Image 1 (cartoon, protein in one colour):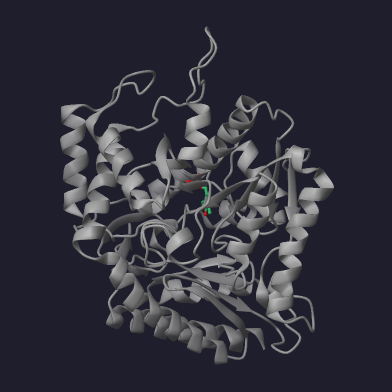
Image 2: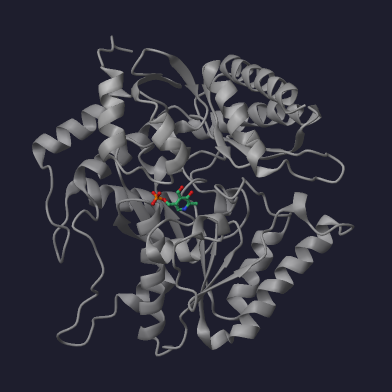
Length: 458
Ligand code: PLP
């Protein structure tokens, strides 16, 4: 890390006066202002006053290969000097955009061979909707428009993708495309109905999807959106068999299955893509972003199956085009960052490391479930959530004003660890290169912070 020379107070004032932050509680923001994060190395970040933290959240589920990778910075600089940008519209490409598309086709499951680029996860999911509608229009199935998603699924923050998002808290005060989007239950085994087995819960969820398609009419339903593990909704791992059985229901009614791998791809669960390798399904589309560049550049991708591409790539009627795309689709500097990131993931066998160290991370964090306020520790490998409860038996939550997630995060921050609070939960998604020793330090800080918070709440 370098010597820092920042005027923190001046930066905080400029920030408070002019930067509208995403997902911000203005009542506390206006009082507390921002933490100015200024520097990084390995799994650590440092604020503008020089305090060092373990980054337990990998930026925001995205810094997969860790911070300060000179090879990625160099690849981006080289590309910016050689050709900073050129239009991707029509019949023009750039070497990194073409190379990366072929690489993603090689890494993605089975017949998912065609890549559409955007600048992040929301746009990747928005693209999936536009392409699905276009696909069904091309087939003459023009009534197939509706989208089914799950309560507590998170799919982005454009108008369309926030409508698909099922985290109800995120909808407060904003409007949604209510006519197009329909939710089914969150597949959260911890909060399944009282007295129901996990197997029966899975049956119930699968039946609910089928019932929803039948209620809306199979001729009206275009898409089912699902994260393999729901991330921002609280790291929810659906019950065994759920992925395969929901895909079967979609196939039965000609509903396209979009696997939103914005968080789960590029090693977080120990695989390049989790859909097939962790959960045994080959969806119709996979959307990804975040770990695609490990956060070094903004890039997202919607990866389509041959089945969809073969329909949407039929030459259009004279005078019409496939009119979808963005100036920065396949930005060469972002694609160069992604190619180098993937090269590092492969060269350093980071997926294998994420399996070994990730299993240890999961196991150690799950040991915190013995603490009196921790009701559930769930997730897989480097994607974990701790849910705090006031009563472990009844699973009753603390009142929102107890701000238990926030308290735990603040205690961790004091001790040099960043974990993300989500209401009564705390989420962890660190860089995937963590060693077992670093994991031990993280878990011990978290344990102490939870114990201290427990005393506060008494
Ligand atoms: N999908 C999932 C599963 C996500 O977690 C996110 C962001 O956290 C998105 C989509 C949206 O991605 P972005 O914020 O890059 O638009």
